[in-house]
Amino acid sequence: MFTGIIETIGKIEDIIQENENLHFFVSSEISAELKIDQSVAHNGICLTVVAIENNVYKVTAIKETIDKTTIGNWGKGDLINLERAMKLGDRLDGHIVQGHVDQTGVCKAIIDANGSKYFTFEYDAKARNITIEKGSITVNGVSLTVVDSKENEFSLAIIPYTFENTNFKNIKVGSSVNLEFDVIGKYVNRLYDIRK
Image (cartoon, rainbow, N blue to C red; front, side, top):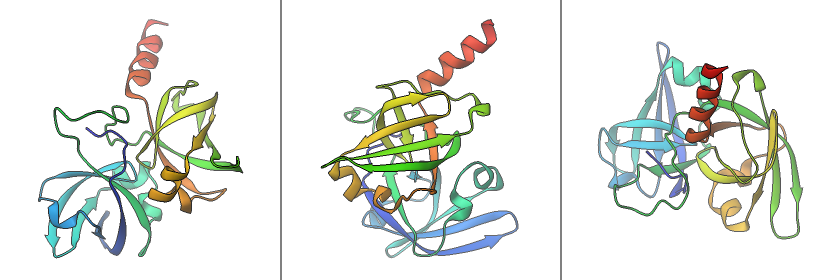
């Protein structure tokens, strides 16, 4: 379980393919504090630490993860948002985030708003995920508030701190991102479908 409050940015040092799996070697400020078997969200994707050496740790993505997220597009040198799992009893500064990406989206627009930036993302509505205005969504692991919600699109206002301290500064129009929709909204949506 995560909160969507990014701790630090990691750098992909190496990627090795083994059969259908991808092994990622990541360096970060928190690498030395990690433990094997620990869950870490990488751009919102929950991956398990399987090895640690010096400042670099290793995680593995299986085909299911590669097919449903942007992880297959990551390259050596890419910067990714990192968050360790929350501790029971900590403040929940973001929202409840599982680290299970629902689908990907594409950045359609970025507007400079004189101090903040508005990002608009489009996603495939066939997956039946929903957003609501003032509701929560996770983009590349970052807990954010929806400011404009449409059937297959939403917008977010990004404050300068979030822009500078996450990989939002690397998102351009046309960039693909990982989306995790609000868990409560997903259950309500599913319940509605069952009762129809």
